[in-house]
Structure formats: C-alpha cells, structure tokens
Length: 569
Image 1 (cartoon, rainbow, N blue to C red):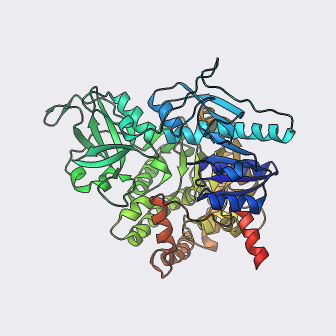
Image 2 (cartoon, rainbow, N blue to C red):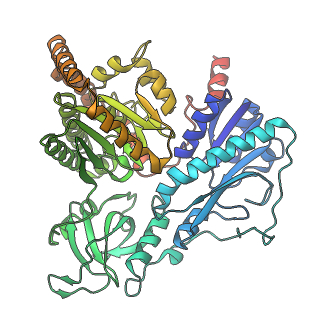
Image 3 (cartoon, rainbow, N blue to C red):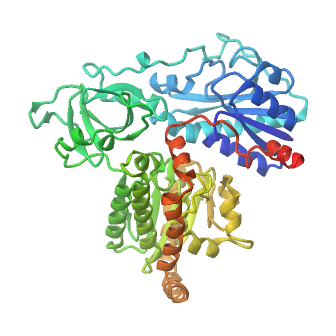
C-alpha cells in the first residue's frame, strides 16, 4: 500500500515503522505535522491508501481524516485518553501498560480500535520505555492493524470507557503541579518516579542552587547517605558531586541528578549539571563513589565494557573517560572484549548539547571529534583480542561508526541504525569511517551508505555489511545471548589463528595507508564544517539541541514533495 507517516518528528518509533513498512513492500512517505494546510497538501500530493500517525501533539485535520483512513498510535491501554498517557503510567506506578491503534475521529483518542498490545511496565524513564516497550508494542499493533485494514473484512471495535475489562480512562495533560517534588516528604522512590515520568520532555520543574530549572536523568544513590560533611542530612540538601552529576538528599536516602535545563536562561537546553552550574558544582565535595555511566565486568575470558551515556551522546570528557576505561580493560587477561554501549543507545556520536554550550562551539567540536577518534583508534589498533560491539539500542552517526571499528558488530533485532552524518548540517564525519566502511560494505559504493540519509534496520545493516549478526531476542534476552556467543568465540579452537590473521591484516593495511592519514583527511573535511564559511552544521546543531520545531519536511523523507519538485523541473 501507499502509506503516509504523519508525525511531529522523525523520532525512534517513526523510524522503526518507516523501516518495517518499507521492508514489507509498502511505499512509505513522511510528512511532519506542521500545520493543517501542510498536512492537507501532503495527503493530496501522495494520495495515500492509509495514513499512520505514530507521534502527534495535536489532532489530524478533519478534512484529512474524513477523506482518508487515519491510524493514530496512542501510547496507552485500551480506553485511555489524553496527551500524557505514558507520563501518568510511570508517575502512578502502573505495572502493566500498552499501546492502542485507533482510527482518527473528531474526539481525540476516542475512535474505534484496530489493534492493541500490552506489556509489563518496568521501573525506567518514560523515554526508555518509549524506545523499547512502547516501540515494540506499537510496531506489532500497527502491522496487525494494517493487515486487518488490507483484508477489507475487519470491523474495528468501538470501546466504551467503564465497560467490563476496560481499565483505560480520560486523563488531562500532566502539568508541573502534578510533577512537583516535595523534598521534605518524598522518598527516593517518589523522586525517581516523578523525574522518570518527565524524562525526555518536559522534565520536572524544581530548583538547584536557588535557580529554577527542570530536572532529568535521575538515579538512586547506593549506599544511602545518612550524614553530610556538615552533619545530619536534610531532605533536599545537595551533598556532593561525582563526574558531572550531583547528589541530593531525600527523606530516606538520596538520588543522583545528571542533567538539567535552566529556566532562567532564554533558549536554554538540557546539559549535565556541572556544565549548567559550573561554579556551584565545583564547590561541592567529590563523592568517593556514585552513579557511573561506565562500568566494566568480566566473565572468564570475556570482558564487557558498558557505557550508558545519556541519550547516547559522548562529550570530550566522556570520551576521555571511556578511553581510559578501554585501556584498563586491555590490561585484563581476556580474549574477547565486548563494547556494550548502554541499554537505550549504543552511541550517537559527539555531544551536541555540550558543544552548543561551549564558549567556542567550533573549538569544542574539534576537541570532541578528536577525543572520539582517539577511542576509535585504540579499538582499531587492538590486535591481541577480538573486539565486539553489542548494540542493545540504536546507534547513529559517530556512534554507528564507533561500533564499526570493532571486529564484530552484533545487533538486537529491533535496533535502528543511522550510519550517516549529513542530516546534521552536512557534516562529513570522522571516526575512521573512510577506513572501516569500504572494508565492511558488501558490494557497491561504500559512500552510498553515507549519502542514503535514512534509517536502516538491523537486518538491512547486516545485508550491507555494517552488522555481522542479528540476535532475535527481546531486550532482556539479548545480552545473555551476546555473552554466550562471546564465550564460544573465546573458546574457539581457531582463536589463535584469528588473532594472527587480525595482526597481519592490520600490518598490511597500515603499510598501504596509515590510520593517521585516514584521520587527517577526515578531520580536514570536519575542520571546514566547524570553521568554514558554511554555517549549516552550527545552525542544525542549534535547532537540534533546542528542539526547534521543523518548518518543512526534508525531501529525502517526503518523497511526494520530491516527486512534485521533479515534475515541476
């Protein structure tokens, strides 16, 4: 069928549906929900058989849903209505939640149901749940709804709230008053639940150092502190710092808070607390231990390096810490080293928010790209063991090519990759992609991968050569399977021969063209992006970190508009 994806942005769920629908032979085009007139024009140009709205902030125009069948993906159980479905579910401690695919009508979220799915609601941030459970459930429900629609025989069910077995109800937009933390009364569990319910957006409005700000990225502190440097701990008291996060007391312990957005700065955006409040955080005592994004574990001959960076971004400081951790892991007597990234993202490259906040974004961009290149170089020059990138979550831009520096790339079945840079203001990219990509791509021009500018599934990535194995396990089972495979690899009778071959290939490649030259050539292009006359990268980065609403849909997504342009040419 011809399917139009109508969405607020090309977010993780929209990307997953995009690749899944195309893989099933559907013709898919995308239009950003900018204005009623734009949506109406898009529908008229594409003449879709079906419109699917995976991520919306407002109603589909009546002139569209009256003419075309429109499926709306609602992140709530059957009968649930309202714009803050997942926020309320997390905040109220629901243990089971779901996704419902409804047909658009005049009343929001009240149309007949075409399909639904439920899932256990783990203790996690709203954004993490959205990327995993909601995305998996929504994908399954949308595919089922489309099959039912295509059959022409299915009659969608109209659900009445309050009917037997219907738990869903209408709830309003969750406001900051609903999210407010009472530090004098709330336990750590209360605080974590409230911040997790707003993580991603809009955060929880609170105060730090006497300044209004929104809180994000909270983690429980263990062990729980009972005394500070100046005596007994008072709830709400800021106690210490660890890397770029702060420790704040609750009624029964404390929580780490990693990111904030200041409310006293116009155009503010999310930043690590230590960057948003540099002087105040620097004055805090350093905790002996705290929530760490980087951790290492070992099981026999297999080492695993986890780096769960917030939103998958790697700042200069994080790259330096990751490089130190990687070198420490190399000192261990292992045969296989697994780079695990984090559960939500393997990595997304340089840290655009930290760069945007720097006194000189160009200089910080340069420092950041060199720091991540240092990590990539260390991996590429490791010749005494096998390295494996285990993609539990999505990977994009520099994160995708960080993974490509490993000997093996294993991905979970639902992972989406964006192995390109151009969408960020025509960035050229580094991370040694000009070395690794030609050695991985199976046939065709490797540069075509870079110019594609579209997301690809783990299966597509495997067919291209960017992924070596796709593991068909859910999120919980994926890592168990990774460890099983890594152990088999470490015990293989051909392991020594593989290491010998790896060393020989690296020596041949270095003799043919040194890694330093690849890096030099890539960075020469990146220097133009950072310091040249074309400001595209700096403009795109500013829009990205501030969540500036798009004013038009890129032509590589809106194929109906590209066809219109070509027809008029």
